[in-house]
Image (cartoon, rainbow, N blue to C red):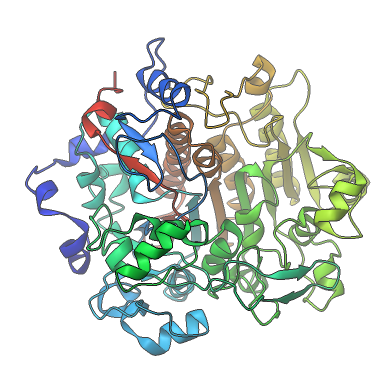
Length: 577
């Protein structure tokens, strides 16, 4: 635990509980599968009665207790967690006395202006863009393996809910805030805990994908962070009552009026692409951008610099290969929706960005994710992805797949979802071949829903319905023919860690946390948190078997929050069996 953070991370009511490390160790990790599934029943009941005013264990949005289930299905301007492991990572360098939010000039540099009500001389939280510097400094201090694990959409409230459900204790969040994650997470005493702001520079822009140009309307909402409305620390009650502040550009007129009545202004919440790019390249930008600055210039992710210095680099995700977050760690584009071009960047193929002046890049050494079987017609794809879009798979054209495959002289051993074949076997065989022969690895899997199957809070693959009223349903083939996020991570490590003398960097994303929270589905979201945490366990196991905490740096964080509100922690604790 970082002393500078303890003043705001631990509310006194939680501190008095005196959690032990042993109890905290149970706060994360998948619960055993059981036919009795209280959380699924709780979620199903919430959706069945979603329009009715009533008391609920949890809800989504600013409407308060005793009301409808949801008034918000998008992101918020909440603080998100940061956990770091490894002796080369110094979280204090971007938090507390070193927080960007204590420095007016640094805020101007970040946002392109000094956002109103954002400078805070007592800020303990840092800024998401400074996580780039955290990685870079770890490398400069001698890290030889760099891991960035992103839980898309995970704020402290969702993490708290996961801890409560797993441990059965309504106050389990205190242990997480204290950094009491159990012996496996202590990393020779290097574990540190903090929080960062995620707000962008602008809520939107006018984009031309073909020209790779960007412009901003006069009335665009700008970013910033007002701790009076959003909180000075994780799980703390804000000083001023204006819950609509967290809804940013989605706030209603009455919510905006309430903010103004308290002497404040609204600030934009971020989307995933520019938010992940802040971590990857250290520059804040507009929503929808992928390593493109507000002035239209292309940014350079750290993975590019590391690769030029002889590192191997890779991305793993439970959602599509070139979705916002994995794309942000390597690709460049004015729009996150230009998936086929983003994939080209990630695979080292000519893209619209390189045509418009972005430096050519060799491609990632490992790319594993979903998107297999996701198709679109030409008109729909060109509307979102520009005139060079090709009918067929949304994320990867047939020609590009053929060009990268070693069977056609390309650099990647390709593993795809294969009918009747076990997904982990397919991926692992490809990884072993790539490692043995000095090739790269490309893994392409998924379901009709676009992401890996949700393994929900009780360990099953039968999620409750979300706000749409529909529950995702998986055939046995969906489970068997797809690897898990942990298995994807292990395959990436087989390739990246093949040469013990070559450093590498790996990005791992539990992206389906965000997809579940957009659907206001706590059952699926908590299961996705558990799946991501199992991938972290695989990373820790690899470090302790093949490296050390002197050489490995792990940064675990999120790109933004959602609007989960826990009304009754005791009821959530009752979902533990």
